[in-house]
Amino acid sequence: MSTDTGSIRFILNGEDIALRHVSPTGTLLDWLRLRRRLTGTKEGCAEGDCGACTVLVGRILEGRLAYESVNACIRLIGSMNATHVVTVEHLAGADGVLHPVQQAMVDYHGSQCGFCTPGFVMSLYGLWLSEPAPDRARIEKALQGNLCRCTGYEPIIRAAEAIATERPSAVFDPIERTRTKVLERLKAMTPRDTIRASDGDGRVIIPASLDGLATVLAEEPKATVIAGSTDVGLWVTKQFRDLNPVVFINHLTELQSIEETADGIRIGAGVTYSQAFAALCRRNPALRPLIDRIGGEQVRNMGTIGGNIANGSPIGDTPPPLIALGSTLALRSKDGRRELPLEAYFIDYGKQDRRAHEFVESLFVPDLPAGTHFAVYKISKRRDEDISALCGAFRIALSPDGLVTDARLCFGGMAGTPKRATAVEAALIGKPWSEATIGATRSAFDLDYKPLTDWRATADYRMLAAKNLLTRFFLETSGETAQVQRFEVVA
Image (cartoon, rainbow, N blue to C red; front, side, top):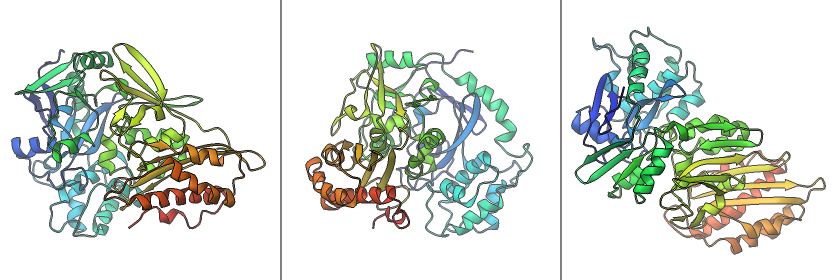
């Protein structure tokens, strides 16, 4: 079955949708509320923080249909091709009987003013679909991206616990009863050729393959490439940027591979944080607490590691640890492929070593040599759903007699790019791994960094915190771990 290359096709609840005229900056939230009058999906923050706009999006992953919670306020409508969008209006039965997730919110008084309730329901529904018996920690993680100013969360968590094992007939559940048919409908919507849609002067381009993407970028070197839109979405909703043309790549399965080898793990640029979590943390458990704090569940379901690298932000959460681990980046274009150390990709603020027609294809993260110590720490004003004021990654290797034989330290938030502390590294190598060495090394930070003051932190605070994180790393690698974990968050 051929795909209409001039329209974007997806399923909304139970209805097939085909959009020929699509704005490159139109959001899913605006389309749902203004075009379809599905007003259960709310606009709260318009930046992916509050979760009032949460919907589920089903997509084909490794041949199966997977549903994930996403923020409709920063998800762009042009990225919806070959997906199943599920809103809160789809949950209740045709006779008005509430879904068990909805009924539990009623029974346990999980709603007061009601504005945030549809978003909570959809996040809990996504969890309910994917995990039959989540514990309290998993429930809280699923709700990281939903904010409520009324209930204090405890009634909502009790509702989630109550429905954890309740499974009504698949005939009742709106997703389970149609899963097989929806999968086949989405397969038919998967593009075979590049889709080009427009709305006036605005253009949306959806390549069908990596070769197609390379061809598009050779023709459109100034195009904005969008994967998860967790950053670009704010360019639209907060900065009102005119992005044109836009190339969406979130559907490209060739960019969503995770390959584990004897030496490390290769991650496609389109792999989301949620997809990468298990493999990355299995190979390097120190990454677990960091990834758990990247946005909320909805952001982790949308945002990609490749996108976090490609946009070149100096406060992206993943580049510091990936640089400290010695990762390499693969860039691709119509002319071929090239690889470079990840740290070399970041040249200056807003400037990366990526040519106009290139795109980030994959990242290789090598395993740590046996006996190497590694840790990463994120400092933010709020523990969850907050951008880093400072992110530090530390890696050292010690000789049998306790001398530092190798050191790689990298910080985000201390310069215009994620940047290694080369002077600090030089001051550590060859020295005993001791409190005296740490104290003597602190002055080397002043050679590496000249941090800025902004609303997240002052320059003095950033410098002091970076130095203190090295002390923390020393204490933890020396066995003193009892008191340090609680000091990640600052007021």
